[in-house]
Image 1 (cartoon, helix red, strand yellow):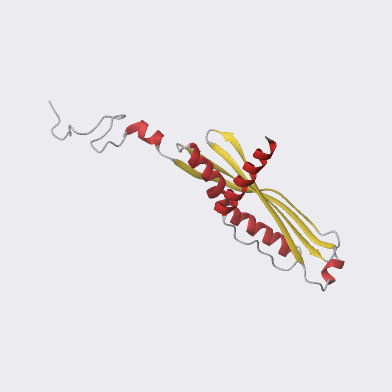
Image 2 (tube, one colour; image 1 turned 120 degrees about the horizontal axis):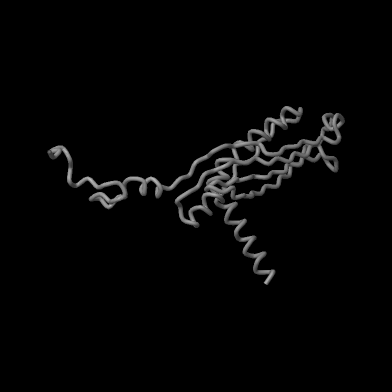
Length: 175
C-alpha cells in the first residue's frame, strides 16, 4: 500500500530540497551560531588613597582612562572576550581614586568564516560587554561617595581598526 499523501519532491534528511537548501542534520550543523553565554565582572578594585581628605577638595577633578580588550579561546566554539579599563581621578597632584576593572563574557561562535569570527570578537562582542562595564564602574564610583561618573560610548569598529593598525605598525618595526 502506498501513501498518497507522501510528496515525492520532499528530500530525505541530508539531501537538498528544490531550492538547494540543505535539510536535516547537515543544515543544522552549518547554520552560523553567535550566542552570548554569560557576562561577568572578572576583576575589580577601587583605591582612594587620600580619603577622607580628598572629599574636601575644591579643585576640579581630572579624569584619565585606559581601555583595552583581550580574548581567550575556551574550546568547543567558546571564546572569552574581556574589556580591561583603568580610570584615574586626580585633584592636582593627588589621586582621588583609581579604579581597575575587567568585564568579561563568554560567547559561542561557530560556523562562520575566520574573517567573520575575527570581526565578531573584535567589534560585536565588546559592543555587547561594554555597557555592563560602564554600569559596574559607574555604580562602584558613586557608591564610594564620588560624584557620578559614566564612561563615554565607544565606537568599537574604530577602536578595533586602531588596534589592528598599532599591531601592524609594531610588527613592521620588529622586522
